[in-house]
Amino acid sequence: MSADLPPTPRRIAVVCLVVPLLVAFALWAFAWPAARLAPHDLPVGVAGPAAATAEVKEQLAHRQGAFEIHEYADGPAARAAIEQREVYGALVVGPQGPELYTASAAGPVVAQLLQSASGGRAAVTDVVAAPAADPRGAVLGAGLLPLVLAGIASGALVTVLRLRGASAIGALLGAAALTGLVAVAVGHAWLGALSGNWLAEAGVFGLTALAVGATAAGLASLIGMPGIGITALLMVLVGNAFSGITSAPEMLPGAARVIGAQLPPGAAGSALRSVAYFDGAAAGQPLLTLALWAGLGLAVVGLVAARRRAAPPVGTAPGGAPEAAPEPVAAA
Picture 1 (cartoon, rainbow, N blue to C red):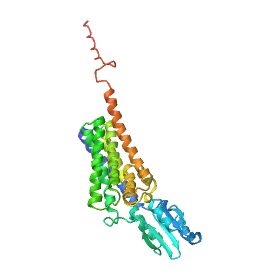
Picture 2: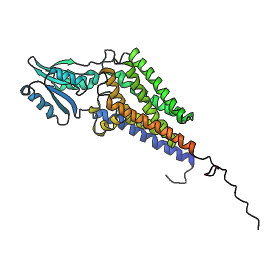
Picture 3: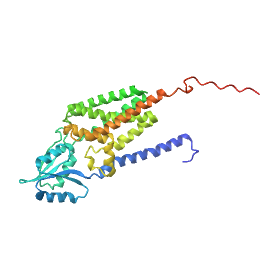
Picture 4: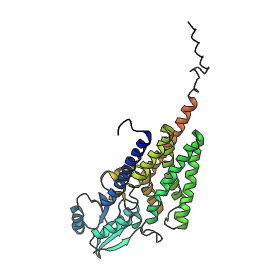
């Protein structure tokens, strides 16, 4: 593009180039994980006598890198491990033959995968079943994006309304709390897709909205409105696409499962499954991730506001007195 182009053609060229680039990035972010969906070090259990489980472990180990095998003494130990979210399922070999323990609440896609891996020869017991109102986890998967959008909206409104410091922090906290209550009212009370403690579920919903909203407001306080766009790209095109909410984080390829777990959407999906179906088991790490994003964003909002208050007004000398006007130059 030459430097002497008129302003209007230049802006048209920018639109024509940027939009296809964004489309290409969005297609990569959403289509690549879906096209490469496969187990990567997926935690599964094997229980029973060593002699009886040797063949099972050999079959699982044959798929190199697919499964992370955990050994348990018997069926009750394997069941407890599933309930604590240590493994997604377990193959138990006993006197009555093999039995497959699954947890469709942890991910229906993973439960189906384990049934296929067992060859269909084992009786299946769903230890932690998904709710009857949402057996395929569709509501849980679809509910994550509105939370992310709600967080972006709260950060954008705080910026547009020029709220600063304590006012901005209070608005973000209030919006997040009400978002959590509304989300749990819809997902738990109305749709019946959640079956845990409703207050814990509301807390995860609210913390997710706060993590995204505080990030948006914090970036906007540093660089202006482009911070909202950066947050939207990061949370929607990367965080939501790499969240693994529709399958499992261990089903995502390569860097997607690592990046997704460190962003609020991925952490929210893991934390919500824990509090909604597993009595909070293994919720500590994703909740810490959400809290760090929220805390850092709120800290930036507060620090930027404090720095602006401490800065002297334009035209004021460092000591606080008005700057002296320059003396007029005498005419020759």
